Length: 386
Image (cartoon, rainbow, N blue to C red; front, side, top):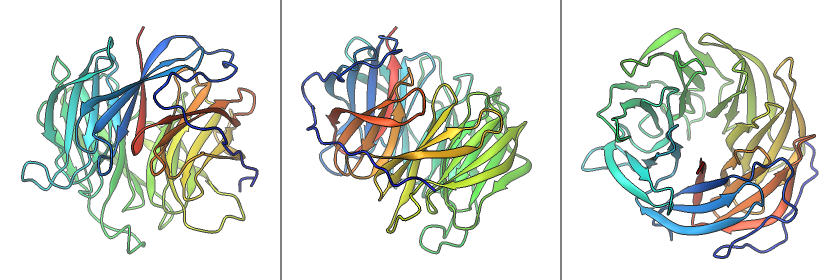
């Protein structure tokens, strides 16, 4: 269990002025980046927003709305850094029981996004998408639809019609949340030979063989890794060495550690993301391993905190380091900056993005005092400009 020691943010947000992190973090590369913000458009938001970000000083300059689109709740950046992909988390799109997926060309001079095309995601409420390792295919998880799909990419980065679609079936023990399949994450393995899909409704990570030439998926053998009943697997992160994987379980607020080898997951450990004395409702959300592979982070919605863990370099297992309060409500997602020196937290219900410095010795998070304003922020993605 995690320590109850917490960090609290007291400084006001800086939204429409350039903000500089006091005491720039040593080791930052000083390169310029764009920071894109995916949102829900049910309140003030109109779509996708952006900032310019200097990794050396920590300065951020708001660029405002860069593309109007409905519920772009999760984003992915093409390896070329020229195209951004967004789910449109909807139940109905053009008369179909489906959400949508949109492709946008990135204007690096202005940060603005130009729509290339939009296609049905083949299922309701798409909530996650990722590029395969070749950058030729986009994989999508449809939450309410309980399905996954693969879309080939054209030369200009626009979406071709789906090359693969799989409808998940089944249920698990939580009658409110697991009455049917709910695909919540999909990505390819480090060698691009497999696609892994976390299904919250089934308590499984489903394993597919992935054909990168055809953009197709077929069930692997074994076809899945099973979680504790009621765990509610949500997002998965590979260790940089490719030997370990970490799964955050939304419903039980845990992280499960796996060893990974050639399409097979073996469970090693499950740990809580909460303090031992926590009482109340909580849904774990995001998970990430820092670029060095030494630390792991997971977000708690309810406790409104980021759990920090140290990773054993020999075993891949986790040791709790502590908890940091996020300075806002409902940290649905977060992202480490490309240098691994800062962590940006998207607090959905308080409309702010709070920045932390990462201690390179122990992984602990310290608030920088910088908080950006964004309407219903959900997903954060960085794009290098050089």
